[in-house]
Length: 191
Image (cartoon, rainbow, N blue to C red; front, side, top):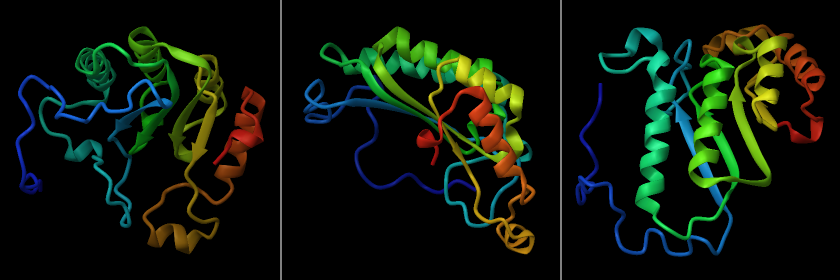
């Protein structure tokens, strides 16, 4: 159940930033984080803003999320105004971004590139749980411009995975790493 918003000034209705919020913009590397709040199951240790399919209310769905996030990217570009450098890093985190199809995640990269531009050598990371990727989806993510995969593995011991409410099998992360390597992700780009 949602709690009360934190004390302080309400967010401006027009989305404008408070004074000083954009200080330094254009003088240091610029990164974009996109939060994908969907998970297959709720892990007992997680404190992130995430939702399983059963917890989603009206107005929110996996199917519509990428389009809504792309609209937010366009809005952020307007709010930031001139002087925004090209994006040096993109991190698609969550939740489990790989619950969205690779084409939708690629669409988010296209939206970021279209609004801000991706700098040459831009690092693009996607968080993935071992149970939400396979050989084909990893190849599609690589083809869409993802340069780095962050595979979530908390343990290789079945009873520990159970305690943590993780659903992947102990050998699955190693298989996903082999698939990622075959898709063109280098081991130096893994976390």
